[in-house]
Length: 87
Image (cartoon, rainbow, N blue to C red):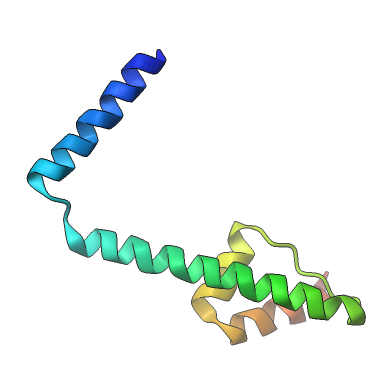
């Protein structure tokens, strides 16, 4: 696509959202989900930093960040158990 078309469409979408207003419920749901995924990435990062001394490494990707973010520390423990016993 032409870059001009993309820029114009983005500006139009922003204008429509400013004029009509964005629905708050879906945006709140997406925002809380994004925050949980970021927290999951932080859990995984710190686990990998401290787990390096024990030889445990969980790769940071979308799936593992989603699991550790939404399930919290039990999700992180299950990922570590899968890494130790299954893989």
